[in-house]
Length: 192
Image (cartoon, rainbow, N blue to C red; front, side, top):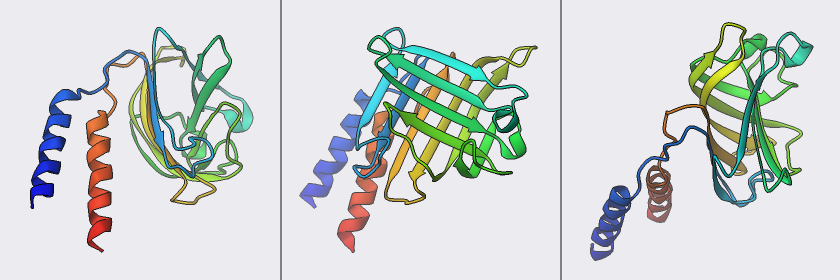
């Protein structure tokens, strides 16, 4: 019982000292140790130390209406890309997109691809939730906010999960929330 109370107090302290990450441009991701793309890392990138960009592909075959969010850092030596598109090559708008598969080979479903530093997946499954999708009158991206989870080769144990914000004031989930989710999973596993 003392361990439970101690763990509870640690969680409360963690909640009070961790605020949501608020910035105009943010890429945050965490991954399982078996994830090819994430390599078990938890990373946060913010401007101005990282260069953020957003691009919308217009009428270009299988790339039509896909949104590409990207970062570059260390003088363009390191990079990460997130590509997403709605079902049937629709422009991503606010909403949840389940059952996404590897962009641009997703057929008529939603497409997703998070890759970086020379690591990517040939096949994948996952989902994403667009929280903000603002486009100008010409269709170019003004601001964008998306949370995503990707499973390497469709294997649930090989996951990378993250949040990408471009010119957005929507905060990413704070580390304390992710910590609590992980703690809950550990506690459930111990009981079995």
